[in-house]
Length: 524
Image 1 (cartoon, rainbow, N blue to C red):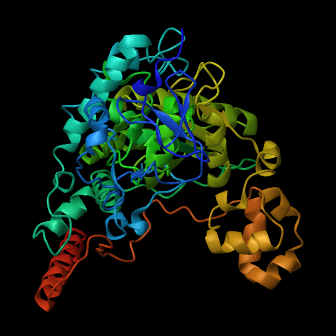
Image 2: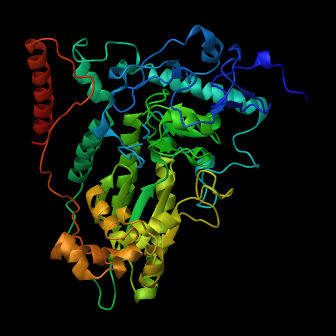
Image 3: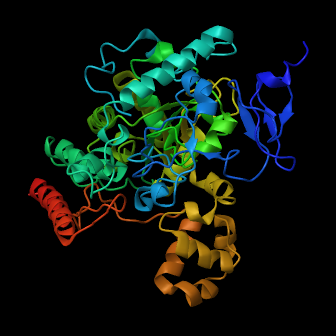
């Protein structure tokens, strides 16, 4: 069919920065074209602005400001909750860098079900009781549906997301700074991901307190190595967002963030969204051109905590030797559960991992990947191999028969997996250490392993140089600390802080001190 008349499309840009229609007409538009009906564009330039418009900055982390669409785009605003506003000022684009979760799926960064909202062990829907080969999959080539059905579900899903956001004070146009809102501190912590991490840590301590104290780790059997499981929930926040809503959300690309503004940061994306190029840590202005049908669900911290607790309690029923990492990630030492020689013990650990994965899925409704290795480093590397593949049609939103969700990494195979591992993925290698290693020419664990130790000692000192080389060789002798002592308790806010008088500053500091004191009180 012939392309629609030019007047039926929106256009923006200029002769040097054209926009291309993404609705199938193949047309490009320049600034002279009129705006009139809804259209989806892909900006063919590096400009962050969008034809004189930009996406509203969000608040702490990525809290969006309710916005009113410009008159020229009222049709688009009515058709989708992914709205545009005039470009914000510098003060409006401030965000909480310390709570950023770029590059990482939060985990605290970016799903749990409460008892009323998500299925429990005995009432999970039939499609959530499948084995590892079928979890999260839908029949047919397009689980998201096609045509009008898919479009309708996308609109209904976005409407649901907006309804959920309606309950958050900081998203409703209320005063958004400490100067204007007497409840700013309370509202900020309610919506803060960093605060959620602290709340989860307290809840984890309560779970451990409710159980008998873990006994000391049993000795390693003669002629054997220890065997550890690394459990990591798959796109956890996005998975929790789907609990109890499978019929509506199954097969749709979905991400979790506070808002849909361009400066909103994605903390979690499901595998349908990842297949379109959407990743955790990506700005919404980057994600939406890649995936126009993206459904953006808000954080649901209470559901996240509930699901995380179910996962941990399931793990603690298998072994008391558990070391928590975050709300969706943990290590478990199962050496004492795996009898026989080295080969038999490894097979037993792999079988146990498969059983544990099925049990976690049955109780939480969310899929997990489990890596098996002789130390924490190797177990975590194994989990990478266990994860669903974005490029595998069989995996969909979980594992398939070729990628079963469990992977055993043997010591003799470790060198192959470590050879091309970026050094920043090794434990304890932060930005500064990474920079210094890069200056030495060590960008991968394989390159680090081959580097002469005297050269490393000259930069890092003897102890750190030895540790870096050991990790690069797959040797991880970090101590097992199932309950490491907490060395500090605090409260901080680095967004929305505005004072007009000394009294306002004093009042804000008083509220912040009260929050820190309450946290200390909960710690005893």
